Length: 215
Image 1 (cartoon, rainbow, N blue to C red):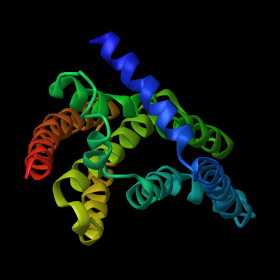
Image 2: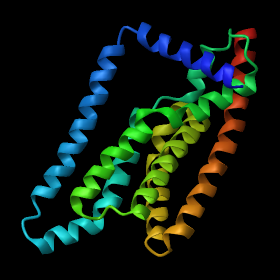
Image 3: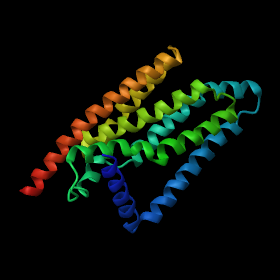
């Protein structure tokens, strides 16, 4: 399986570099990250007093999580479409789907964003071990929730934004009521459930695509 993952990763990197808009997408990604940081720093600058700063710090983590969710929702591509270009490779379909799901764990949009958000939280004075862990698992939740919804809904995914955002807000509310250990356990369970259902959804979409090509 590791050999197949390395082979797929090589093909994926080469396909990205062959795209005519590769550099443009890279620049847009960097600009979006910079814009997000500037936006959050501007929110910090309007807190002139210690009281205001303390009030902002309370809402810092929810603001970051909601902003992260919104960016991912509108920028992340549908995983079902990405699978089609690899169907000609001599790789078992289940391994191909597993790669599409697990490859997100190696992306900058997971670990890079966690690092950037962590720096912002450290500046706010609210970065702790548990805050960092909650932030990381919320990013994973945002990522796989969006991938699952896009694989399930396809072109109608934009209609689900209010519902998905409401779900994230509910989880944030629950987070304020429970201990970090319990909350992380709940998020891990939800993420694993999303990954399992995502595998089924992508497998179904893959067979639909194969049938369409065959016709």
